[in-house]
Structure formats: structure tokens, C-alpha cells
Image 1: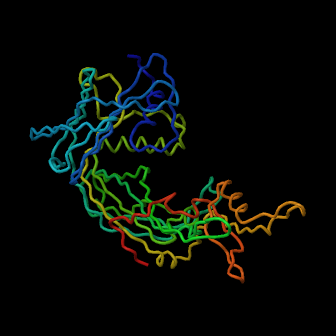
Image 2 (image 1 turned 90 degrees about the vertical axis):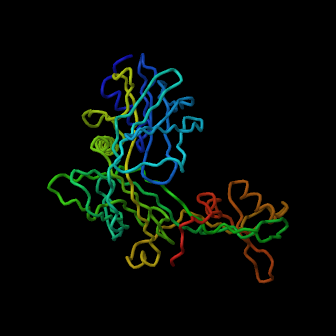
Length: 407
């Protein structure tokens, strides 16, 4: 197998390692076939754990090739071996009832491909994780665009209870928020100036976003093991609709090993380089998976083993108002039109409401409601862009199970 320089390894690794957020870059490497990519996370939660197995391609702009017929299992230091179910397309899962991680146990992931190659992770200890003590937020202003502009919004912080000496922590989060479209569609146009109420007005919906930031922290010997005012997320008030009605964030805290901490720290360095993987001096690529019969083979990805704790914070709009933040404005244009708004040649047939309707809907606009004149006749038709009229185009109308309206 061809030996690759560190820059080539970094280029491939930066694309296919877990949770990266840089622009894809797949270099063409002469004489190089593919690398195995293994992604998995094992925690102490009552859930089904997923391992994803794929291979890189040599060709530029190609996607991952999923490894569909592997045999995947997880073993522990108590002699228990759990085989994962093959769901197809490179996805392998455990039974949510019959298996979960236990703090203090050591786990090894094994992947055997149909070609007979045997891959194994390093033994991974599931470390104890301290509880999250509290979540809170404050008004915050930060500089952007090379510190030439400022953004104002809120910054979310985390306090954690005392952990262990020489402990390493990682966080991720899931955001959820309720939003309202500015011009919901309330009517359907039936023709000849006649309208009818729609059966369902999609005015309020929810959006979700999973974090892709690398959030890690180390507690060294001699330091206070308690985490205080750890910055998790900054939300600019004018950049999105997250703070207009009600916002919720679920933060998960993981205990990780020193090796996994180095893995995420390397990925953080790549991300902070702005997607330019050659902007900094090459560093050692960290992975805890190897080919049992060929230790020199490069394998990408990481088998994560971590205990986890979590906490949710809900922020109602009333608390945002108290901070005197500027508001986000939807880039939505409301168009009110009637045949009289168009000058027309004297001898030509006059435009009708049907003509106005066809003119705008054929251009991609959505009819939302009529405007009535003094005689209760439809005087104008109102149009807007589809995403400004139907919240289900950018979110879901299904309320999350955990959601409670606070305003």
C-alpha cells in the first residue's frame, strides 16, 4: 500500500472524521485505493447505538462508499460480546433493550469486512461523567468580519459539578425553537375572484439544529475540577428566528479519554483554520482503530466510549425582551396586486383577477389572502414567497414531546 505524507492524511481525515464542518476536499492520490472510515458512539444511555462503516474514494467530488456487508460487534472486559444488527447502507445498530454501556467497563469495537479484513479499536474505558449543575445565558456582543463589525445576542453558558482529576470533557447540543411565518396562507384562490379558507393554516412550527462545533475542556492535576461559565453557544439576535418566540437547548456532557480529547482537539484546529487544512503545520492524526493484521494501514474515524449527562434550558420570549435586543426580520416580501395596478393598452382586454393570480403563482409566489373593498368584493390579491406562507417548508408542525409553551 502506498505511504502517504501527513498533508494527504490530514486532507482525507478532515473530511471524513466525525462532526467536521469544513468544506469538503478530497484530493486525488495516485496509486491509492481507499481508507476504511469507522464512526461510533457508545454511552451509558438506554438507547440503540449506531456504528457507521464506509470507505473513502480516490476520485475528487465523490461521496463515501458504504460498507454494507461487514460483521460488527462490541466486546467488554467482562467477556460479553454483542453483535450489531446490519441495517444496510453501512449502518449497524445494537438492541436498545439488551445492551447499554456501563461506567467502569472497557469496550472494544470489532469490524470484519466481507473481504476478510479485521479491524479493531483500542480498549476504551467508559469514564465517570459529572452532572451539569446549571445552564444560563447573558446578553453578549462579539466582533465579526475580522473584527470590523459587531453582533449582539445571547451567549449560553454551562456550570458543571466537580469531576475527577485529569478528566476530559466534551459537549454537544440540540437546539429547538418555535417560529411563526410572517404571511401565513389563509385562503385558496378558486377563480373569478372567489376565495375559500384553507383547511390548515401552517403558521406556527418548530425547527431543530444539531451542533457541529467542537466543544472540549480538560481538567489537569492541581486545578479545580468544577467547570464554571463554560461558553457553549452564541446566538446573534438578528441572524435567525431562534429568539422570536421560544427557544430550547439540550446540552449533553461527555467524559472522554485523553486520546479522544486529542482527536477532537486536532479537529478543532482544522476548523479554526477556516477550512484550509494546510494553514497550520501538520499534526499527528489520531484514531483508535487499526487493522489487526496490518497495523500500518491507515484507518479513519473514532470509536467513542463515554458516559453522558444532559440538561435542557427553555428561554421564553419574555426573557429575551428584557435584554433589549434587536429583532430578526424575515426577508419576506408581501405583494398586494389588482388588475388596476397594471397599465394596459386601451383596446386590449382588461386584466382579470385570474390573470393576476396566474402571473404571480407562475413566478413562484404563493397566494395567501384577499383584500376586500368597500363592497365586500375582492379588490386585491396578496402574494408572498412559499417559505413565508407555509412554516412546514422550513420546519415541522409537529410539536416536540418535551415542548411546553411558556409565553
